[in-house]
Image (tube, rainbow, N blue to C red; front, side, top):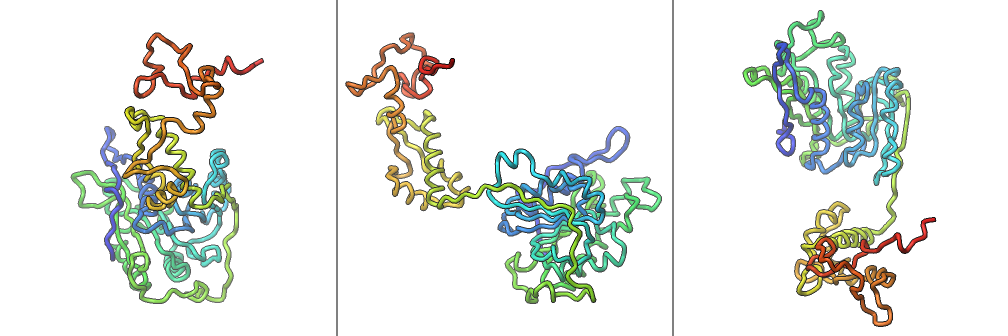
Length: 411
């Protein structure tokens, strides 16, 4: 086993009994499951190593809208046994208008596949993370028996997340259905000890994996003894935990013997590649473009202007987060600034009061005397309106001062 806690203190959720004596969760438990799953995948502890992800038992694909926005994921397999369900909700896998207007910087492919969680299909090769939420309780005994063999023997993912109902919580759900469970298709519902035994047995059979347990959906304050409404198991491959593998990872084709069948494939229902923007700029060019954009933005902020020296002093720290977002470091930024003759003194970028764009623009300003090469203030508002004054109280001749109505013919 290993210990795991969600980053940043976990979820903020509550459980309460309403006026009809019904137990309620805020947010709903399914949202808590989805959010917890995404938080696990996004945990920086893993280093964003999950490029290809499979969501078993995806049903209406409610999790997909979150998965497709998860950093690092480039290939999502939505797998369900019900082909009609996949076809009915196919539109949830399609790109939105916004995906065409604001294209991704990394590829994303989504495959809708009809098949079973225990089938060693070729499409499952090289999957990095497995999601299996509220599915194992729907499986028949033989399928449940073969599921660990497929996931941990054939696929060998870096991470696998399982969730299932905690039957100890059912005392708060009386009356249950005729089958004694929460759902009419459930084949079983486990206590916490039963779920833990199942997971720990998998780790014994596949020693390259460690497991951590957590719960979703808190019990009321006076019933903490029954645990959470949903129990989760997080299986992490030892190398993801910076531990040595007990056994060498074998090619999936020979890692497990499933009998005479070979080259099995799920039925392909739908495949889509999202529009992607390919940025062909060099790293230095990206740094320079970002720096110039942020510098230009800072020139519009009064507090960076030194009235005595008539210069802008922009703290380097202001650019740090923007530069790190494009995968660059502060030393790289300093090198690019120096290479492009952008002055840096101590911890500040030094900028003149006006740049070349300001100068070239002002030659078309009515207040610019081309012969003398100076700007005069003839014709400006002499009423002393402070709204028209710059950071230090002087009249501000900026691009926004131009009266475009007098310059353009709008016929």
